[in-house]
Length: 330
View 1 (cartoon, rainbow, N blue to C red):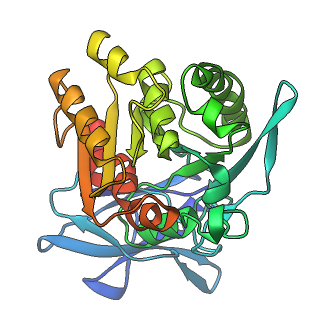
View 2 (view 1 turned 180 degrees about the vertical axis):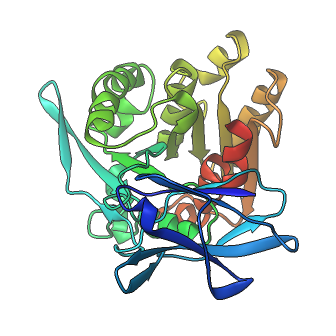
View 3 (view 1 turned 180 degrees about the horizontal axis):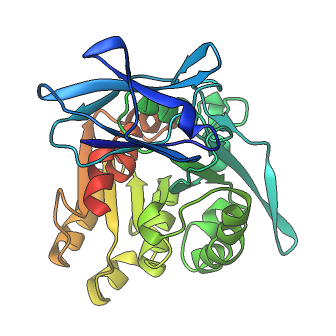
C-alpha cells in the first residue's frame, strides 16, 4: 500500500510510525516540499499508523486518533496536522445583504484547517443557522451541536472533514416555502456560495456540496438540490413538512430525475412520519435506489425538536462525508 501524506513546506521532515512497532521510523520512498509517500506492507487485515513531524530534536505526532487502514484500501491520502488543537472552530457572524435585509452566516472550520493549508474541503450548507452551534442563540436554548458532532466523527476517523456553512433565514416561512424559496435559493447560489468559495478553501463540485435542514428547512433543502443539481449534489431532509406549502410532490413526479443523493428521516409516531414516507415512495418511483442514492430512516419516539435532530445528525453526516461513501463517489 502507498500512503501519501500531504503537508505544506515541511513535508520532507515527515516520517510514519505504525502499530507494528510504534518506536520505529518508517521512512518515505518519495519526498517533496508538500508531500511524502510511504510504501508499506500490511501484515494482517488492517494497520494503525500515524504521521510524525520531526523538527530538530522534537517529534510531533499527528493530532487526533490513529489512522486505521484496511488491507484492501487503495492508496489513501492523509492531510495531518501536528501543532493545532483537535477541535474545529466556528466563525463570527458574516452578514450577506439581501435587499433591505441580511442573512446571518456562521462557518465551522474543521480541526487543522489553518495549519494544513494544502487541503480543500467539501461543504455542507445548513438552514436555521441560529440553532446549529450555540445554545444562547438557539430556539429554547437547545442547539444541534454541529461542531461537536463533526469533531467527534473526525476523532473516530469516520468521515472526510468538511466545512459547514450555517445560513439564517430572513423570514423563515417565506424563505423555506413556495414561492419564496425561489428567491432565497437564487440568493444562496448566486451570492452566498460564491463568496464562501472566495473566503475558504472549498471543493466546489456539486458532488462535494450538500444542503441540509429540518422541518421547513428540510423542504427547502430538497428544493435546492432538485432545482440546482449542478450546485448541490445532495440534500439531507430531517422531519420535513413535505406537501405543506411547496410544489415538490408535483415537480418530482413530473420532471427528469437529477443526479443527486437524498437523505430522509423522521420521528415516529408523528414528526412528519407520513409525509416523509410518501416522499420516499415518490422518489423510489422515479428511479432512486435505497442504499445507493436514497437513504431513509424512521426513529421511534423521535420528536420534532432540536434535541432529536442533534442526536441523529451523525447519520447524514456519515452518509454524505463518510470515508466509504466518499471513496465510492471519487
